[in-house]
Length: 423
Ligand code: BJ8
Image (cartoon, rainbow, N blue to C red; front, top):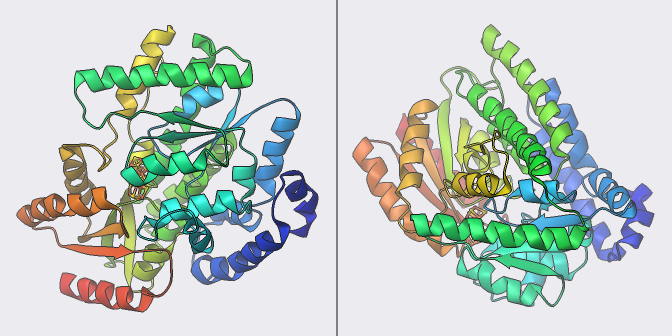
């Protein structure tokens, strides 16, 4: 990683602290990922991306900025990448998934805040994340209370534009969200000096749709039995989707899928036939949060799907590509994004319907409801999900945790008991 020292200096990073962070990842990645057997060859690209996570892509971002381009950081799957790319900027997802940053986040946030928020805040204030340091603008949103209030603190450290996300899905909310997209469009035009025209937006809509289609193809292949790729590997691919170059990423995912299709034809899987199939639903898992998947897949089960924002919520539903006016395109984007089912919305029956549909489609044996500690919207929503799954006869296990490893042993015991109960 030392090759990138000049890059990190140019980003005004805290090099000493950053080195501590860089020293943690290789062993952790080797333990969780490289220890897996029978991984697809196509994962080599994603291994490379992780092995140079703070070098390769940040260097591309720097080249983009050196030639006058802008980088925009986001934190939620409701914020449309299409507008960012149509403005000639690069969009990157910035949610924090590392325990390393949590203590620093707690310097400015209450301890009883969700680890995702503490982690991204710690990453920013310690200047140890090259992605944060590369951003010319951050885009926050009014989703949960923790994030909504965190933006007010983040303003002390970065330029931030906050979008007002409605929390119901009536016609009036759809129009309100399209209005927010228009405001974001203006802000991006001002930032980049580029006008967003219908033809640029059309290209960006196609670009992002292609990424979604590739991920959907990957997930379709996970429906096979035996499953041709581990849940950990699929999760890694989705995590990388948030910051990799969309065109290159799409082509790498499609190559991986070609290989997985061959595996499916041959009946070749990463786990033996008959392995219990688990769906994970709940809060997002930002890189390098691989904790629950690792526990499940080292306890004899396979994760076959994630109903999360680092899963199906990220890529389901496309934006209409055939529209030629900005007004129609923005409304189509508003419609697509408002189909996403986050627990910040009320009511949120669509998410419950999705979980049940996914259990059927992926022939899952059970569901693990993953809740990041102190995430109230998802914790409260659990009761309705539990009742619905019970009515359908689908077993569910609730796991609330943070990013530390302190409770890993205890979670493993509970997961193993759950798997035994599945028979
Ligand atoms: S659309 S899930 S990405 S808001 S886990 S920070 S909700 S306290 S991340 Fe999210 Fe958008 Fe919804 Fe998805 Fe708050 Fe909960 Fe923390 Fe969360």
